[in-house]
Image (tube, rainbow, N blue to C red; front, side):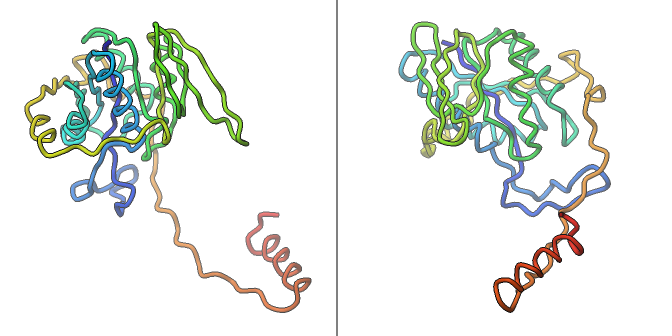
Amino acid sequence: MKICVCVKHVPDTAATIKLAGDNGFEDSEIKFVSNPYDDYGVEEAVSLCEKDGGEVVIVTVGKKAASATIRSAMAMGAHRAILVKTEGQFLDSDLTAKALKAAMEQDGLPDMIFTGKGSVDTESFQTQYRLAKSLSMPVVNEVSTLTVNGGKAIAERETGGGERQVIEMSLPCVVGATKGLNEPRYPKFPDIMKAKKKEIKEIELSDLGIDASNGKVVIEKLEAVPERSGANMLEGSVDAQMTELVRILKEDEKVL
């Protein structure tokens, strides 16, 4: 079985982001990591291939620096990788899906594709759906339990309120992984050293016939979240506090 895992190179959620210009941020000194939800996809793919045999291929769309994140996925057990290089900090989900599709078709389509349920930077939650549609594959997102057997994938996902869906799909398919699907392994030193020798095939976005300037979504302006003011402590009886709270919400905050 051949499994592709889409892995994104994202800023660490603990990093302090400083804006640069209207639509960018300073990234030279920020720590970047693998998108956390993608790690569940890597672990699941590697576990399936360890059990039944096969190959795990990491596919990433991003800057040259994304190779560091790819090496981390390889240390978890992925066999090789494809890096579609871009120059900008942001590539919309439509172009990202097209780049992933083109890279996979060039390499040979897999039997399964894993993604994370979403990326922690842009949080568009669209790439896996666009990719699946373009490849005419079934897709299910936020998968927390998965069984693959006999050309079928049975996925379970939470839908809220304690309810769960069980979905059966035929292979090939696209699976969006989330927390609970597994526990991503922590690579050992020998695995990290082996990962340095594994192949990363680099492809320019333009070589796939994709123009980065033709995205459907363009970021016009980024703004830092304003700092919150201190808490306003209400005093008096419960009735007095409730009256004052309603007044604040209506007159000061204007949310009622």
